[in-house]
Length: 81
Image (cartoon, rainbow, N blue to C red; front, side, top):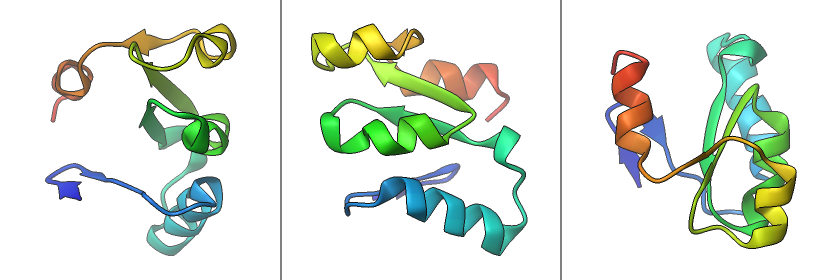
C-alpha cells in the first residue's frame, strides 16, 4: 500500500528496506520518518530519524518511543504534504 507521499512496508527487515531506499534515492537519513503501530515495526522506528508510534500500539512500545500520534495525515499536513 502506498500513498502519494509514503510507502507502506509489510515484510520483515523494514529497517533494511528503509536504508536501501535511502541509499537508492539519495535520501539523507535525517530526512526519514516512520509511522508504525506494532512489534514488527520497531526496527524501522529505531532506524528512522523521526519515529512516530501510533497510539494504538502496545504499551511496551509506547515506553520506548516517546512521539505518539493518532493520525498520520495530521503530521504529513504539518510537514507540508
